[in-house]
Image 1 (tube, rainbow, N blue to C red):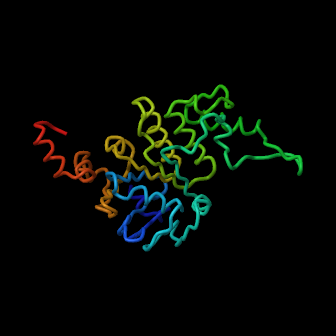
Image 2 (image 1 turned 45 degrees about the vertical axis):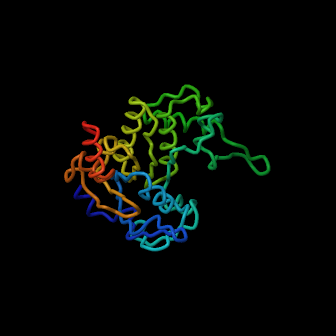
Image 3 (image 1 turned 90 degrees about the horizontal axis):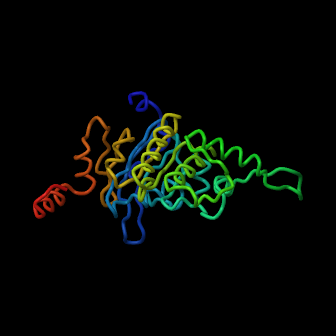
Length: 264
């Protein structure tokens, strides 16, 4: 971790503010993530996680604060600007078309073409080979890359979306609740791939409600509450129970536990 701390962060935001009229969505959020690191962003519903994701990925522009990418100030005007800067976001709904093939989903919007104008056409053979190879790297054997992506399990579809972002040159992956609604085996597959991506030198921002999943792969944890940063902690500095209490409100959980006569 000391080596990570000595590097210039890929993303660094300081006192980010976002207002929607009189509604304050973010009110001074600060965080940073470096290459080869998994930063877990934890917070209950309404904490500001979704707005922060949209700000980092260029969907919305902040009302104030500092946003640096590799030490340089940025002002994204669109998600394309964020992609060009190496920031790729994998949303909870994956932005995939279930009835289209794995290959077509993998290359959606970035299809390589061959031939001469006006006879240029999709190089499907190359696309299929790349898709099969990239999925094989993460331990998923695709017999037919032309099969509909909807035939894959939830965990496999998550891995397709992450592999797509890695292949197209992401420096930072923002993963929005990648393990929600997944079974144990599928969750294990996704967490192992996140670990693999981290080892390859990419930075990962992992957004989740599940402290157990976060603790399995994260190097550091940033806690959001009502649009503000409660703090950032290394794994060695905080226990899982403490994380849960900070994220969900320790007093409320303790009171509910006493009312129900059990442990939550």
